[in-house]
Length: 168
Image (tube, rainbow, N blue to C red; front, side, top):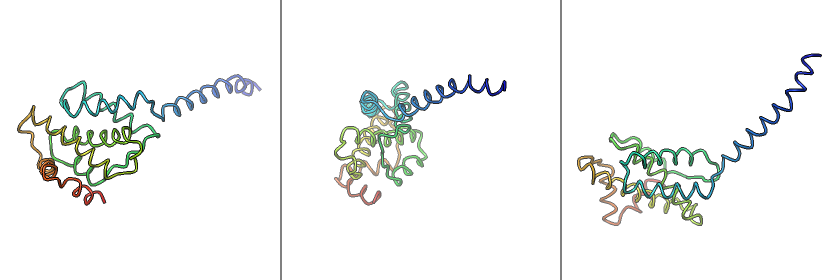
């Protein structure tokens, strides 16, 4: 009988805690317009200052939150993701993060083109190449052949075709 009374006392409190936690979790599962604007801003900051510690921390936080929310779906190209993350390159994290953030930023900035993965990949790789060039400005010896190859294709006007083949 005593256990039954204790359960009756604690049951409403536990129910309230569960409901509050569930509501907080579901509220956090979607992004706010302010967050989305901040992610886009951070993505563009990283294009010119990828080695800046505070901007890099903002990028890591933005990527974590972008991957946590359920209202933005970013269809990444596995071949590109593997290429960037698998590079033996001191700045592969910055490059891989930039690809993922820039893909999300494209969807946020162009909601009407969210299903156009070719356009998204072209924009995201363009952002990656800006980031790579910014790295090279600070660290001229920080070359990466896969990124140099993409820069060459971009300068020849062949990047879009190459990405379509790679990400079919």
